[in-house]
Length: 624
Image 1 (cartoon, rainbow, N blue to C red):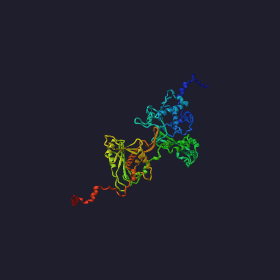
Image 2: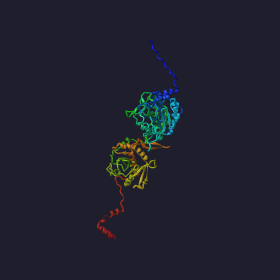
Image 3: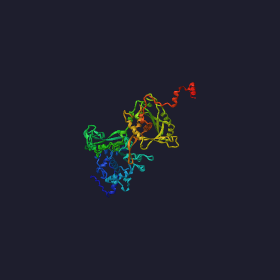
Image 4: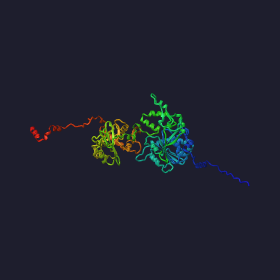
């Protein structure tokens, strides 16, 4: 029997454009990474791109690993610490495009200011949307504003970090934080912008946070975030000569330093020398090296990786030659402000003034053989400093000699003014068995509890004076004012205003002196906590409006600096007691100074028998 043929069914009505669009919307998105999306859909606009046209991953291969980390389900946060102009913002825009097309969800981009957010929307984001057909089809331009762009299935908020109300108003799945080191800090009324923005992502278990910036200080947002990552990755490239995977570092840049050469001539001859084979690499080798490169883990802080950090410097940039980097270095190295910008923007490293750089190890190296609570044989003066805190008092006692040579003989914590009084009134024995010494003057910080400090100093006015730090640079290192609080027992008493920054400069400089008069020393077996606090700050350039000035700031947030403040006060007290003139004073060796006898003492010596009855009578009779 002939098998029955299956009838072919033909649609009675054609599929309309509306139905086709509806069916297409039900299809799952392509399973592609951010870097694959960028090469397929991203078009660089001539308005903002150096190389307009279709996106090509081969131009900046190092961005591929960063962008694709965004698609890693286990990764919650990506931190990219970078130099300027290496594509960090372009990688962010590619991630945004991927979100709009592949996984629409509430998204927020935070920039240092509202003005910058609007500028980036107009000059970078909207040109990207118009240039890409797939993004343009999803963009609801008529429903959008400059602050909030609407797309199919999502909104995109473009806000400035200076607008706390906008940061705390919406639930967010995808959060992008750009140039975070330019964000303002926390205020008394609001938390810092990054914390406020993070709070918006709490309701999403699959949230993603991308943070990028050029670093400024070690206490800046991006460097702290990088150090807090579960893993930190650096980009390694193959040497064109030996094939070893190497990291491009400044220390391997080689350029001549011959007499008579201009900085331009020196920079023009700059090459990169491989640390493995000493092979010379020049700019034409860089594109191939970058294409063969890979991100490698250099620090693993946790086996559970949710936060991934990436770091690189300008040596990797395909847009900057080795000679340009060297030329910028040679032009800026002698100007602190320009060199800070170079270190941040080209090295992608936090700034520290190396001329005043200190470390706890350096303090520990300044230990002498003189035990704690013992005055060195060369000392002529003891001064103290006290930093008043909410729950305790930090104190220090320092011995001073000729040429401002000094040594800490004791330091510690007290828990009442009575304990401070006791330690400052002790008699400290000398190393050479000479007469014991006491603190001549101690300055006590009045910034925290002024009333109690004033009363204490009034009761101990023979050795104690209140002090406070100056909020602005001063012409002199200290000035003497008056306590003007009429209700205080210390009314009219001297109040010492101290330029802490000037004294910290001097301490840092003298701490670096080795085997020379004027050293800044510590006693034998000095504890590490003291050394850490003494070196807890560094000096950096701080911009205030159009002005830039150098200030001492903590190296890390919440770093304790109490002993450093104590030593500043002890130094100011020593200068008030003339420590800089002590080496000019002449005291005969082994001959104690004696004051001339009073007139009545001379008369007694000449008439030693005046108390004898006969002599007294004879003297009086003869006198009468």
